Amino acid sequence: MRPPRRGDRIAFDNRQGVVVLEFGQPQVTIAIVFGVLALAIAVLALVIATHAKEDIPYEDVSRKGYRFRRPWLAFLTALLVLTVGTSFLLLPYASGGRPATVVKVSGGQFYWTIDPAVLPAHEKIAFDVTSVDVNHGFGVYDPDGRLIGSVQAMPGYVNDLRLTFDKVGEYRIRCFEYCGLSHHNMIASFRVEEGRE
Ligand code: CUA
Image: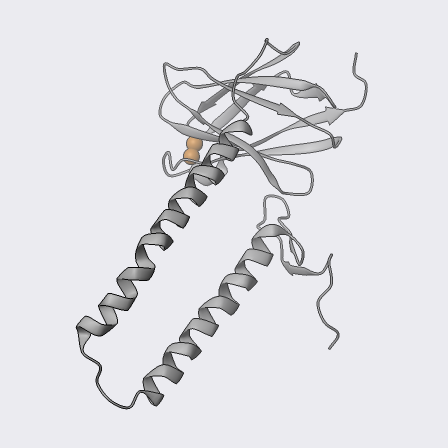
């Protein structure tokens, strides 16, 4: 068996459109890294447990551990502020002027209405997302089955999601909030085309 390469399929076909996980995609990479680290920690714990000879007083252990804990907490806090702060800059929600193209999106049990359903590529598009009954989740997948944006569809509110599409093709919508027995059937799509105007 040759080693896995980018482009290999390891999971596919959920009936309503193919979702493909490939080696090289972030979620697969994260799963592998997590698995390897978890295994390494388990092995380390096993080695330490089997090689431990005599009991060490708890105070000795905790003194050393607590010395390490404070800087570790400071490091994690700094990391949290940095990563969360950075992610705020990338939020896809309303900022700046209204884009030229505004799409009216409405969720209901159990359907989506999307108007217009053919959109231009390479320009910022505003999705005005609401619901006629209960909360739904508006999740947008690109033609390769990758999730590229999501926002809540809530009755009585209009949430504004801004996306720019660089790939032409069919984009799929799935409901992201459990909303009733046919939640899984809330699938719709729109097309992105080159140079519509
Ligand atoms: Cu609508 Cu789940």
